[in-house]
Image (cartoon, rainbow, N blue to C red; front, side, top):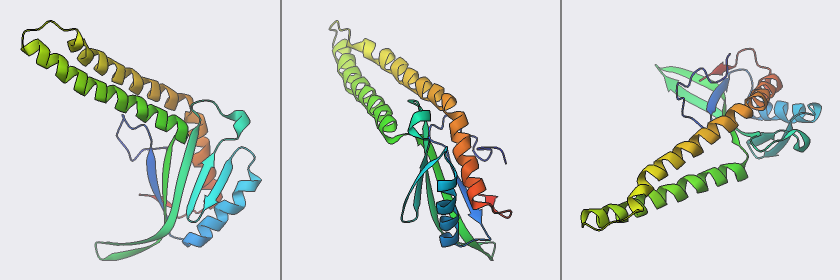
Length: 181
């Protein structure tokens, strides 16, 4: 199955998807992933409870290298009176946490500056005073757009590694009846 075909959101920076394993229980899926991690030298994995954190080895990482968080839990769902049981596998891909926090810091800083500086500039301009603070509005919008474009460029740069992590997860679970939700 092609990566992210269920999501038509082109502006998504941190792709997420959900899998359903009808064959294995949550502990069996976790055990299969736990056994596959040491066999794969191109993936580093840490397991904490039902969470699995996958990343690329340090020597192959670049600034935009992805990290993948996988949450494995029991799945119970009643859809159309058909009880679907199995294991739910929720996956979240994105840049490393430090990179993600930096991106959010820039987004929020520019947004706050845009909001308050722009409001102040518009009030002064409305009162008939000359001010350059009005230029914060188009400047802030352009800066937000540049940050977004930088994240999309970084996502494209880390795409091969991202697909590798997804492929590793699929091969580690190795469930022919696994479906994408």
